[in-house]
Length: 229
Ligand SMILES: [Fe+2]
Ligand SMILES: [Fe+2]
Image (cartoon, rainbow, N blue to C red; front, side, top):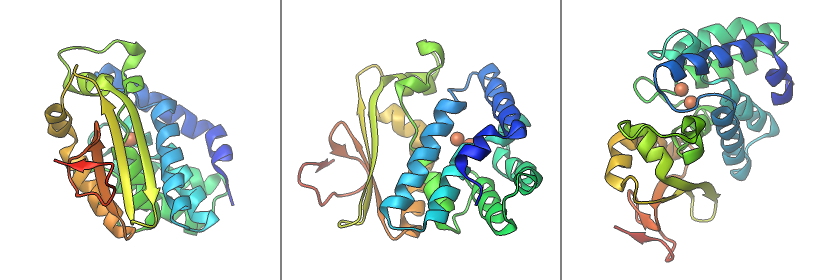
């Protein structure tokens, strides 16, 4: 099967990623380039690997993570479905089997919290990976705009770990944030994404738990080291 490394070299995909990231930079968005895509690709494949999915699904999750935001090259609105439509001929031409192409475009077309629905493991893993990306390194040039809530929230986050515990059936996102933002600000922009992560985890037969500075904010934890608020 076509691998992530081959997809990364694809000229059309490279051009679309660059254009989408440049467009979002002009609009004042945080990073949507190789940094974000590497994170999403890595975490998507990690989740499926940790849950014992097949090598094929793990690689497809890695690829979906890398290509999921190409639709931003057209417009932020509906960038999921737009990206899926664009990817169909590109991935087919790259030599990907039609079954795998369909798996990718369904995941990409459904990764936005405004319109996405989860119908596969690859799609679920992509959602958790994409919606969990929050970190100071996502702020462009290391210079947060203090009037921008996304910059403030991201810049306050020093550590972000997503872990899968098969024994307790828990997918946990642990954030460490400083006082330059607040849990309330985080929730004000991430709430729809947290809810989508919960749905994605449920699809995978798991629960999703968000922990901020050692406190579980959305789910009682079986781990005594984490306290629920
Ligand atoms: Fe996206
Ligand atoms: Fe994304």
